[in-house]
Image (cartoon, rainbow, N blue to C red):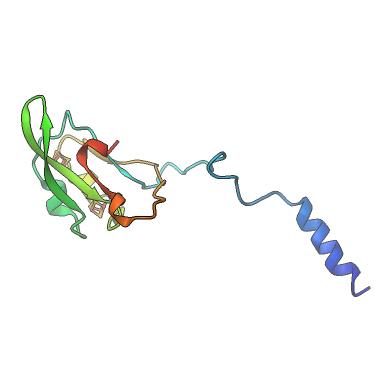
Length: 121
Ligand code: SF4
Ligand code: SF4
């Protein structure tokens, strides 16, 4: 009797639906309100710095970018410090800085989480 119960439990757990997926081949569906990596539309950014000024964790630095219209300052985001609060998205006048559903932050080096404007895609 003593041994039957754990065997029955083990057999039952083998028949249960898996809770994990085989990442990266398989992906869970992401909820609509998930806040992940930031995306920047460089063509509509008006270089106002409002995103950098509102950021509560000083996550955004305005850095120089070469564009067709010459040099412009645009946001560089340190995703290692980002709180994903959404304030920068809220305050951006042309709504060119947006939070995406991208949750892929895996890296061996935190410095790689500092994302230049050209890489905010
Ligand atoms: S989501 Fe919040 S913490 Fe992250 S960059 Fe925007 S304002 Fe800063
Ligand atoms: S991303 Fe938006 S808030 Fe930030 S500098 Fe560009 S226009 Fe201004």
